[in-house]
Length: 385
Image 1 (spheres, rainbow, N blue to C red):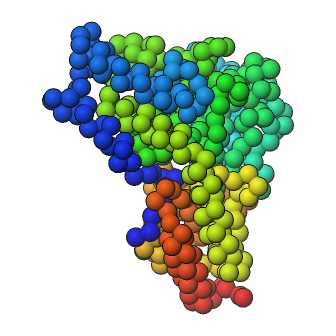
Image 2 (cartoon, rainbow, N blue to C red):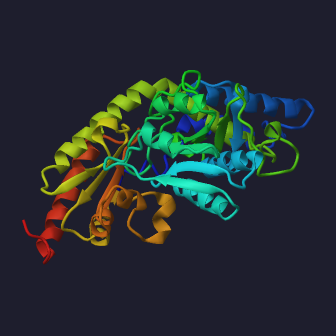
Image 3 (tube, helix red, strand yellow):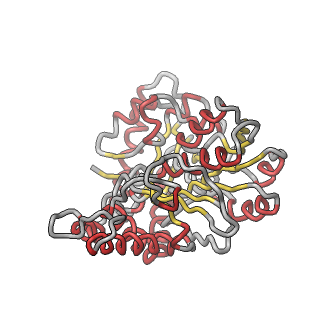
């Protein structure tokens, strides 16, 4: 099996596993980090070290990192929390049609609570321009939510240009940075984003662990969505999972060390894969290649049926879109928003690369895809060379 689905999840880094293990046994630092005794203080020190490690990758302060169970919770806390604090009725949100499901579904839920949402349509390359966002603002706009890197097509939005423009207008800016953290340089000291979501398992950390960056100056105010013991400065109650937090911190520290080298290697492999696939006629690259994240390549293949294509590639772990949308069995809403019809959107593959991807695997994957697409086209009565 050739694994090319790193955008869905990554394997746990062995070094991260070793960091986590001492917090899982009876003779380790298993205590509740909120407890006021020696073992509790030791666990708390681990939590704060990890908080600083996550903050370092993002160019943030440790006190601006709030632990969550993952990016879905982070996005919910950011969007619902911002609107609830400011009052949902008549509140306005601006987002795009190509956001992750957890953002779109959260916005649709808030519409049932009296909020208004503008869903911007991206251009053919997947980009939402800052000018589009500014034109959509109203006096009631509380929040703009855009992902930094699209999880299906890998396009990089112009969040660094948009952020200061929203700051000038007093509008909160939330960014889903799940596919950007560890892939692109992020410096929140320079880019005035108010809320930013990240996840551990996208950069070789444990599943079920994430964080939300909440800016302190000027302060981004949120209403908590989980109530209990007032943990995480009252924004997210619940006993902290020390072993997972330690793992996330270690994963982010490793990502900071490898950021430039990983990005350079992965972009080279991505470009090689695209070059090899162009041996096939009538294929389309989805997403603006001039603003592409290093690890994602999304390609549509004319003249084949999508389900048949995926069934013909049992040795390739690739996807047709987001893993979180796979249960619907529908063509990608992201590709349809870019103007692809249902047949072409369904006949698309997302290749996402990671640290374990080799040049040999890229060559083998390209060879398998080319062979199977040619075979399926020969069988199709609709294919006209």
